[in-house]
Structure formats: C-alpha cells, structure tokens
Amino acid sequence: QVQLVESGGGLVQAGGSLRLSCAASGRGFSINFMGWHRQAPGKQRELVASITSGGSTNYAESVKGRFTISRTNAKNTVYLQMNSLKPEDTAVYYCYADSGSNPIIRYWGQGTQVTVSS
Image (cartoon, rainbow, N blue to C red; front, side, top):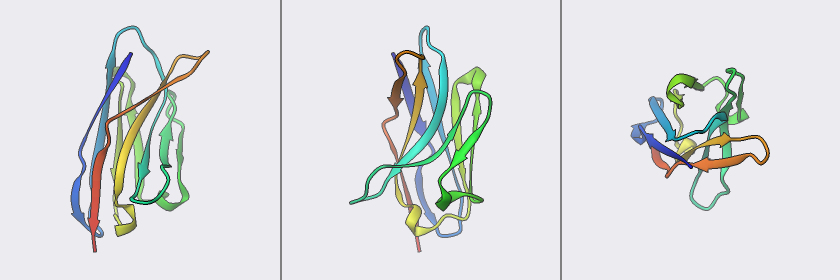
C-alpha cells in the first residue's frame, strides 16, 4: 500500500506562482510514473503533467511553458511548479503514483485546492 500526501495549494492572483508537492510512503514498493491531474467544478478530471522514474515528462497543452514537473526518486516525491497562473487553472489538484508492473496499481493523493483570482 502506498500513501500520497500533498501540500502547497492555496489562493493566488493571476500571474502568480505556486508549488505543489506530493510525497509517497509505504513499504516494499517501487514507483514508476508519478504525476498530477486536476478537476475543476463541473468538469472531468484531466491530466496536467506526468514524469517517469527516468525523468521523461509529459504536459497538457494548456500548461506547457508555464508548469514544470519534477521528482526526487530517493524521496519518492513529485513536485509541480506552476507559474503564470490563470483563473482557468483553478481546480483541485490530485497527485498520483503508479506502482508495480503486472498489474500496475495507481494510487491517488487526497487533493489540494488551487484557486487563481483574476
């Protein structure tokens, strides 16, 4: 079992920055992909960014050039640096971690609110 604990959400003005963190803990696990999804009110959850254990990254088009995902494998921690925030970035942000290979199990954090005011 893997537990994910997120931190770093909050209220920020448009154009501002926030940094989200997500730490994974547990026993006897190895993590492959880590990443972030978000869900705005009335909308489906969408992928924001992901990163492999080797550091390869993938971003949603809407955040490219503004958000940066990184991770510290030794600490099983993933970060999301969010710059030039827009009101449309307002959502609950959920981190996830994929563990195992067959099957792959996806674990989710509890979510952290990000609110961007105009």
